[in-house]
Length: 588
Image (cartoon, rainbow, N blue to C red; front, side, top):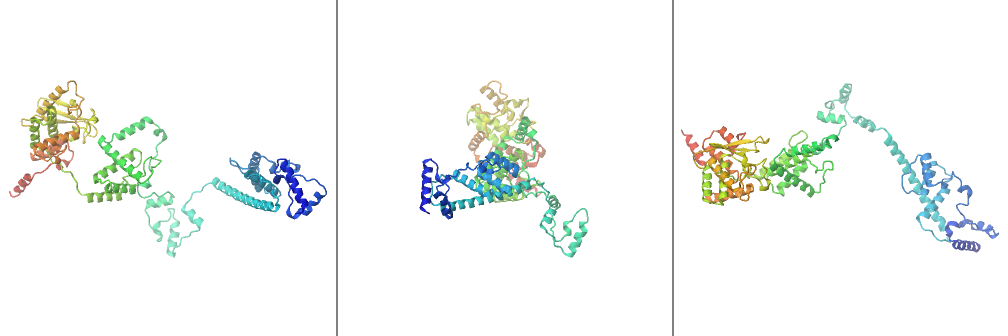
């Protein structure tokens, strides 16, 4: 570069720095190839003028030039002239200007506006750079930047075309899809033999369509599956996962609070409190199993997903790790079914044809076979054993009140064929006068007493069952023992006690099951029996066994025990003496 040009650039740089203006943006640096030509006017004394974007009145105030438009006007022009709706956001003016130029197709202003846009991008994205003396590197950088900007412009153009295509496809009317459309669109043709083609032409004329058995290359499927294929409906998966989780319910009914609460109460009242507790335990174990394996709940129902495979693995988990018996696993599965039915989900234990799940049934059968019979031994408390227990209590085993109460409870349970839960409670705090046995449920007559059970296992509708206890001459007499206990109870707790529990402990709490069994086992140990083989149900078993030994007729045994079937035969324990007597009669 000649010395005159360098001095002129240096003087211009000093003047621009003294005015607080960066020299690179406002000093017109000559190109490398035109230095000698541009230097002649300067040598003749022509004054150097800086380039300012607002000095060119023709380009500054030309309202047809997109470079003079505001951002809002550019967006409006893009919408009106090009049909492009600019989304909300911080989009620079240079980008909007490029969009407008590209879509309008004005090639004359591309270079000018691209340079202007490039200058704006430099000013907005990079800090201002001080004066450089190497003008060749500036031109190279400018060319690189313009090339990059052209690539970005092409990218925006292709994106614009993609948006137009997607918008056009969305607005088009969606056509129904069928197998015929698929074959026609893909140009697929069936390859049949001559005989098959003739059969095909003969059957295609029928209005009923083409039967699958007329074409040998097509497998014969069930009519239901054919109907699903021809109707283009979704084929459900096999098992419980393929069905709809819930049935559609109108919103009006869902928002009816009173009806919803009543439905919930009715569902809860369909099972007994004891069964409800067992069902809740089963579902809690299932929910814990699902959480253990990180299986999320279904957002639609708020319950874990359910299928035959999941239930199969859960049953295996209960057998392998929880060490549960077959009966307990089945009870847990019933609890899961009850929980899903409450939430308006179809029974997970039934298939689509309302039949038991085959794989789950096989798993349960295998578990039962491997565990074998694990029935707990429950020996009967017959009349002879009851008499020994009463005599021990009369001699004094506990306090006088507890001895009289326990003697009365054992005698009434034996002659009334009572289940342990019908005259005791699970916990003392669970006593409910509307459900459990109270003092007011006893009626004293001349030669008999009546006992009314408000609810029992064979009375799900709570109609009430009246049990008769008759007076007898031999010991133990249920009527005499019951009157003795009621008199002692009235002395211990005076006042109206009709709504109070019939059998109570010394602290005036209802007699619970655990406490009653502990009392009985202590008395049996004193009497010389193995108390571990007896429980609260032994009185009912002993009554049936004694009735069978006393040759009471079968229908009377069913009436006394309130059995509706022949299951009472399971309670009758046949002694070896009876079997020996029966074998001797075979010889006569």
